[in-house]
Amino acid sequence: MTPWSKILRDPKDPSFQFTSMDAWREDFARRLEEARRQPSRPKRSEEEALRDMTDPTAPAVGRVTEQGMRLFRSKREAEARKAVQLGVAQERPDMAPLTEPPTGRTVR
Image (cartoon, rainbow, N blue to C red):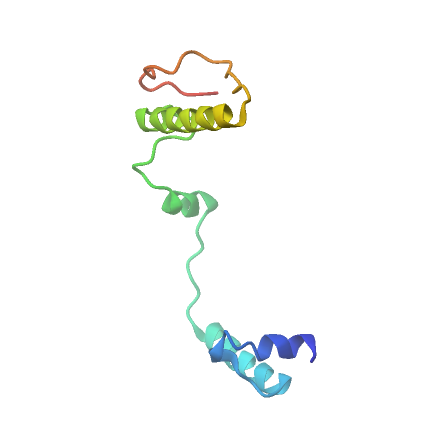
């Protein structure tokens, strides 16, 4: 069995059951021509594309939030329990105590 026939006769992909490479090429050419006839999309800048992918309600990268601090504390507590089970000491982070995060603090 040739490498391309493994792809063309993939039982998990019933939409591409071709009997030969020529049949596949013919279908591919037809699909390519259909795609070329479609109107072109307007060009967007990288900034516009990134803006569309960004959740406007999400905190800024690096921003310390209450939710982030809760998650961090939860993970550290789980790590501490695992360290006790394994009989090892948990590393101590070189940072201020994790009690109340300052509002709007940005980590750099």
